[in-house]
Length: 191
Image (cartoon, rainbow, N blue to C red):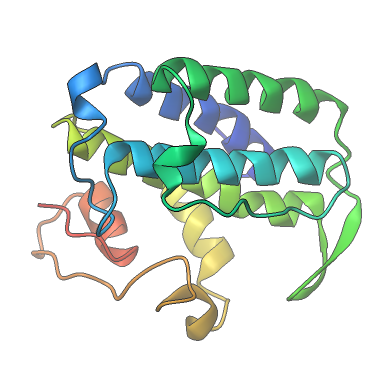
């Protein structure tokens, strides 16, 4: 893997898909590390992120579906639903111009800049989904490095809290693995 948002996004589709494929039917209703969400809710939320990527590839502003719970966005078999949206993302990526600039709440950004969040979501939520089923997921070092380089410069209020992507940083022991330190940084309890 390299540390650009496009490559991380494409590699992340496979990374997350490998975790999704390991879950059994009984795993999707288990509670996830995301408070109040099941594994299926996390997958539903992730499909929203992937659809954001599809909008960006088409040069359109993303829209957010209104549903009672994110799980409502997943129809049929969860692994098949994920595979279908991931395939659409791969196809659309091939035709996308990542240098196109778009207006955003944080000013003009390229599609590549905006793709960073969906790319990171693939890895973080692969960890969330894996955790629900007792699957150990190690997040690659270059993904951790990329995420910090992209998110650390952002204002804390844009990143953490009720309207941010992450909760307050969780505590980990000094000898925690890089993945455990990373997921704690995102506001998740790694243990």
